[in-house]
Length: 391
Image (cartoon, rainbow, N blue to C red; front, side):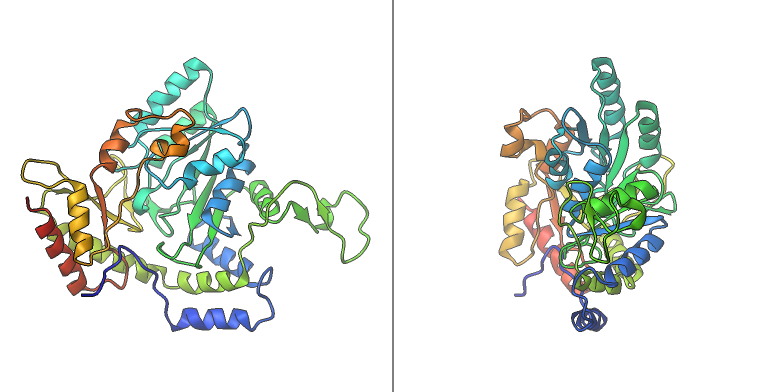
């Protein structure tokens, strides 16, 4: 029986043609494909500036740097995420801490954030940056988070790695509430460039800092030169940057994929709604549909995550996971809490600090969801899940 993965990329002939064109254009890197992709991405997300990078982790790193993370500064993020969400701050020499999740939305909890900020203000240790993570493609509740940022003086860096094309209150994620937002183009994400990422911002000065940091801190711009221009070869390094550039090959694929984003979203939404109906009577908690009271949102549906509701007649999550894998259903778990990773335990974190995230992680199960998943395949997933949940 064929294996059904939890996620996979969707590549068509247009994508292949775009990559072939880039390969024969004479520009494999630092050519016209990257700015074209940046412009299209910025337009789709209604933001002034988009800076392409080699991967989303690189984007988180240089965005933290550009927003002021460094020694003596603290960055907060969600414990329910991939480790890159906090690693980017550590790369800068900053300290990290976490804000527990809302058990319904699985995103950073607004109440938990507010309470932690009140305590941090009393202790004189407010964060410089807060990184809310749009888990599974559902936006965090950004209006109250923005109000808290304005009150307490921290920057908001959205980890929108799951949320390409998602929206919050009828505006694209990355367009309004954050100081900067980072998106991922890993193969299992909404659109792919193989590896790759994008940082968006409305701030021109911040965008320029990001552009310099992704390319060794080097500039050739006449207006930025500190020494006389000695010729067309002249360049100057003004800061310690990195080689975090995206290639033209990747950008060509990303630009082609971006043209199909509405179709990708529509397919994912249809499958998610179908799961809602097919799974309604099983002992599972299903994904939330809105990020907070009085809000609207369109999830990108990067993941469809259920939670196995514990009970005397329900096997534990590990048993359900194993049973599904045995019959070729490629479920996964997103995520084991970052603070409980051995490296982070070495920084002083321990079990019990983030109870909502830990309780969620003990029950979470990502089931297959991607545009090319067929109805018969989805029916097979549901049938297998139904059997796996039996005692």
